[in-house]
Amino acid sequence: MRQSPDTVMTIKEVADYLRVNQRTVYRLAVARKMPGFKVGATWRFKRADIDGWIAAQAASPVADDPAAGKRAR
Image 1 (cartoon, helix red, strand yellow):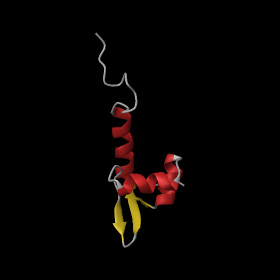
Image 2 (cartoon, rainbow, N blue to C red):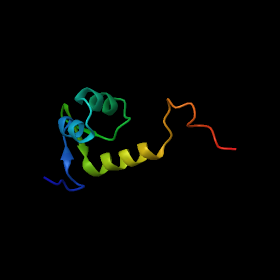
Image 3 (cartoon, one colour):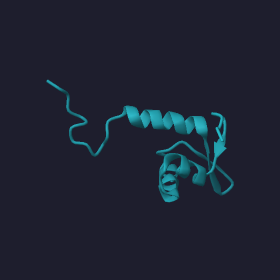
Image 4 (tube, helix red, strand yellow):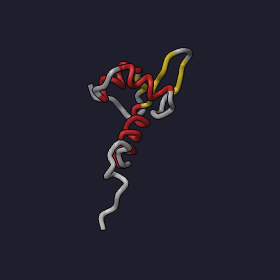
């Protein structure tokens, strides 16, 4: 099933989409490192926001990579 960009996803759906553990999604959402919002006590995520977040993550240097901040001379 293909989802539209305005689809709202649960933690489980985001975890499946990203192929990570549900705890990882929850931890990132609580730390405000991933775009999401709460409906009552449960987290929800807009598909378009997650896709934008993925693009931003792919464009930024990896923090754990010591070479990421170095420029070629």
